[in-house]
Length: 125
Image (cartoon, rainbow, N blue to C red; front, side, top):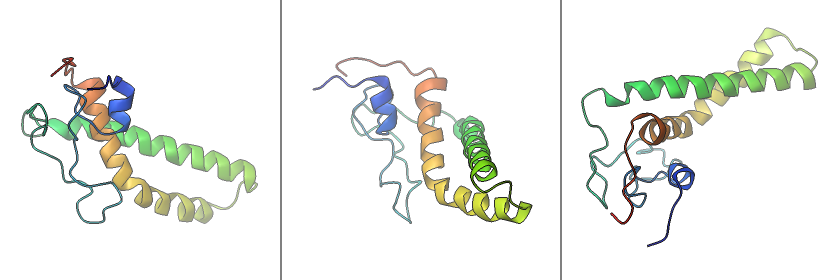
């Protein structure tokens, strides 16, 4: 069993308690099922959604990620395209938000589990 850091576990979508079991069943690029989560960790049995509505807080993380990506994209357009018209911003940023939605969904839930939920890592589990 190799030692996995909290950051490595979060980046790889692993369980916050054992850092070995996967959180999601399919890869993010799977059109059907990018949001399919295991109910329990396949390795240690941790129940990911401890109560109904548990991941509502992950929406705030998702909102922050989306806002940051949109803001950075807006700054890039402003400086590289010479402050184009509003429709250019909308036609670039809106599709970008749709494209990053599956990744954003997963990242926000994993961040919620690892950094906000208070689940402690148990070494050797």
